Image (tube, rainbow over all chains, first blue to last red; front, side, top):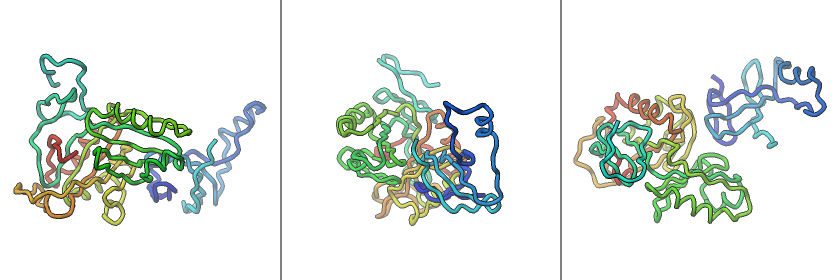
Length: 85
Length: 238
């Protein structure tokens, strides 16, 4: 089990969240090439170590969160509300 | 399926939760009239209460005007309405039956001109609402279905939470029943039951209408060890 300390709801089981994948910059839609868009959608760095990810608190505050998680230990070192678009 | 009464004009509103006996029509809503139970672990359907959702910025004028923080619930003594801070920038006003349109109009008037984007929606017919009461057994039942800490220290009276209950996204509001005179009815679960000076531990749980029966059945099933009683809501439950 992994717990995520939600900044709004407190520590909650990760089963309450939906995983949204690694955070990375979205390519400019107007000028992106199909190859770049494909890489954005499907290629992941998948590092061994700290990674910044997006999580959605589906069964809680219904907010998108930016979570820094260690992929080996599942330790979470920071959770912040995702920037509003 | 319940038979509608002869001579009834207008639509009949039904709770998503099946009544345990023949329902009675009260101001357009079918009510369960199973005799009330006053002590021990018990569960009743309150879906006919007015439920109005209000969404606004989490730190704007509306939030300041409502004066109910996230994760808290406060009852207005005069109107008997319960204002629940159910999430960041999200409130739910629960009021007596039939007050939905009046609450919407009032909130619109109060906050519609505040200059920020406010959305007020009457969700009375879109949500199921139940009340689970009883002494300490309630915590045992909820703990079977939800991972949160329901102790007095972590979740005192007036706490509002949203979490997963029986894998269903459910809003949980601790809304203790007012203290009453000691009752003569025996406590069904062997617990201390109602009465005494402090209010009795009680929770309002609400979820999407389509999942209402599932939530009700899950709570009734989890409470079977404690001899849970299902009854028709009374004035005291609201």
